[in-house]
Amino acid sequence: LIDGESVKSHTNQFDEQISGISLEVLKLSEKETIDDGAGNITTGFKSYSVDITTDADEAYNKMNNFISAYNTLQSSLTSLYKHNTYSDGKNQLDGGDLAGDSQVKGIQNALQTMISRFNKTDSGDGSSGQNKTIFDCGLTLNKDGTLSLDKTKFTKSINESFNTVVNLFSAEDGLLKEMSTYVEDYTKTGGLLSDRADDIQKQIDSWTDKEEANTVKLEQYETMLRKKYGNLDSLMAKYNTSSTYISQIMSSVGK
Image (cartoon, rainbow, N blue to C red; front, top):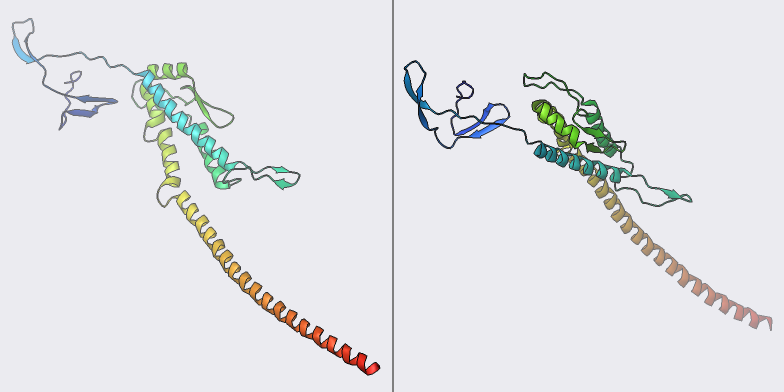
C-alpha cells in the first residue's frame, strides 16, 4: 500500500506505479501488533514514511550536459558553413569544409527555430496546471545561436514545479524528443546526411573517372604529337640536305 492505495508489480521493481519514482523492494516490512483503541487487536505490516526530494543539482548538471552538446554542435555547424574570404580578388580558401552549404545552414536554423518556438507545455501532473516556457526555466538563446543556463532560475523552477520542467524537456512531446527525432532523420543509416554523402561520393567518382580518362587521352595525344613532330623534324632534315645538295649543283653549273 502507498498512501492507502494498493500497487502491484510482477517483479520487485516498481517503475511505473508512482509517477517519476522508481522503487526496488528488497524484503517484506516487519510485522507489528495494532490496537485500534476499541479493544480490537490485529497483526499487520509496519508502515513507513519516506521523504522524496528533488536533486536540483543533478538536474542542473544533466541540463548543462545537454547545453554543452548543443553548443558544440552549433559551433561545428558554424565552422563547416563559414564562407571563404577574398583578398585582392583572390580566394583565400579559409572557409569551412562545407563553405556556404545550404543544408548545413538549414540544420542550424531549424534547431534554433525549434528552441525559440518551443515555448509552452502543460505540467501534466494534475497539480499546478501551470504553463512554462523553456526560458522560464532559466534557458537563454544567445545571439550567436548558443544556449546558456541560469542556475538560480533553473533550480527555482525545478523545486517549484518539477514535473512541469521535466515534461517540458523530456516528455514524449518535449523539446529533447522533438530535437532528437529531427536530428535522427539526418544521422540514421540511410538518412539525409548518408544520402548526401553518397551523392557527393558519386560526383567525386564521376570526376575521378573523367580525370583518368582525360589523362589517358592527353598521354595518347602527346605521343601522337611527338611522333608527328619527330617525323616533321626528320623530313625537314632531309629537305635541308636536299637544299644543300641542290645549292652545290647550282654553284657548279654557274662556274
